[in-house]
Length: 231
Figure 1: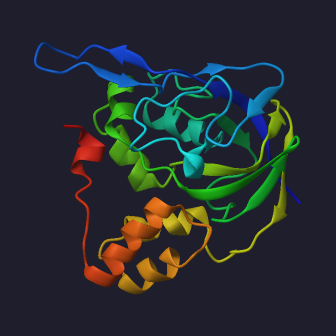
Figure 2: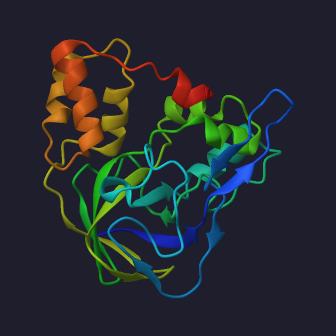
């Protein structure tokens, strides 16, 4: 089954940005990506040429490749008509056509080129996206709309290129769409039952499993304000 297609591939390296005013601290991010043409190597922790600035919250085997649905850009342009959004604008490595969070499931195993990838978790938007585009509420809007994108872990390394199909070869958890996982993580009020149900998904990233188990079993909730607003 063909799930979608790669519209474009982007990579970037960390760079320093100055604060918006004298009171704001400089910050570092690899959110600015550049398109790559031709074959691109995909490793266990990243795509060749791509680096993460904040290794505590980005990167690693569970978050090796960030994907984003191309269809979301039309909606963002409607909401922010003066912002020049295009493929890669949300810091994604893969801009995909033909699929979105509603079409993909946690644990989906896909083949692109000679690589085998598995969806591990939705992306959690942070303040750097908002600060880069000078849209203070953008991270909050990404979370509210569920247009977050998702991460892949790499099961088999290889090479990919823009234009290749994304072939779904296994769907072990059809009940856990990426969209549903987003809804569970940000549900108000929280559902301990849903938290624990999702946390028990063996394909879910370790960080999401830990967060959901703590919330479902102990009622421990993390304050998202620092992630969304900075500081």
